[in-house]
Length: 439
Image 1 (cartoon, helix red, strand yellow):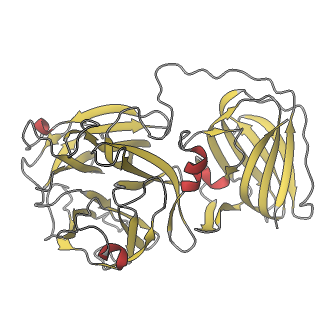
Image 2 (spheres, rainbow, N blue to C red):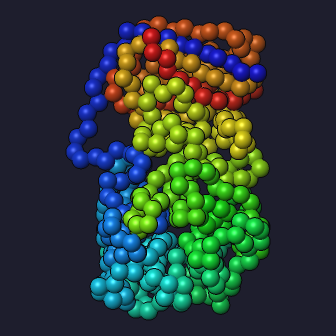
Image 3 (tube, helix red, strand yellow):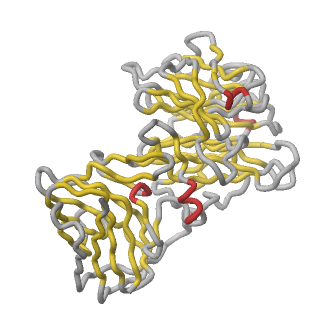
């Protein structure tokens, strides 16, 4: 059963939202800096940090990578370039062009930057700040040979750290690190991967990524991934992480959580035959069967807009594209059937940040897949206690009623939009999407 609830926005008093200072709004590619490759994202102290490689020039036909870049954002919109790390900062040759993929981790109040010296090995640098300045603590490789590190901290009581690295010419390797993060606690072990996707992968396949969801470890490469209940494997191939938008064998990337949302970032070559890349982000989901679903449907509709901002003129704003939500709300769905938000109860809220309003009069339509109990929705502007733009009652015994509300004030320009829910003890709704229809 589906429910359509409508609000009419009339006589809206609008103010222009102005940006002060230089801001690079979210877009795909995600930054105005070109050549951003091998993107690894880590969230430290409620800030998103991007650790990336840097392809030197658009016409390079081989990999010329002279440094690494560190960017940061607190809103997914403006990515600030904080640091350039060069080979002269570590044991590599000062003029090296072999600054391959990197990653970072935090422990004991310190931050650690792990870098590839082409395929010769992986070094480690240390800093008191996520962006550095980083100092080479070993002046030699931590592990060698091979390259492309992923750092993973398990959720056991010791928060055990691991390094995963390598490529198919030999194997992906996993090694437990000591608490100091600059020494290994065991001999690196090859990871066994079972399935046609790995068997058919090119011999050079590198740039892994590892994360854990519930009780499963997810090991990805290119556009494929495998799962295991044991971090050391063996891993069983599952499927592609997504299709379209150059999510192929060259799609070196990573996944990350931010404010309860899941994202996928990856890079692609701008022109075939040239080693110059850009990086993009989309929403990502793990469906009810545990499968990774990169939201390329979002990119089909809103590629240039990017994540973390919305437009009231969109035909639909899918519930699962939220920026932030209360912890009780669950994202549910299947790869081929779409997603929705469930377990929305009394006190639940959903945030859609930087919503752009371009028109003065709207009709608001909310599609609910199910309703239990009795309650109401408040649409608030700015924050959870901000101005109420509209309020509607939601009842399980009155599902088809169209709700109209007049004389609602709203800002023109950009504002955070909050959907807040109140209701009886048994109140529970499932949200599919909403939209604003121009009047």
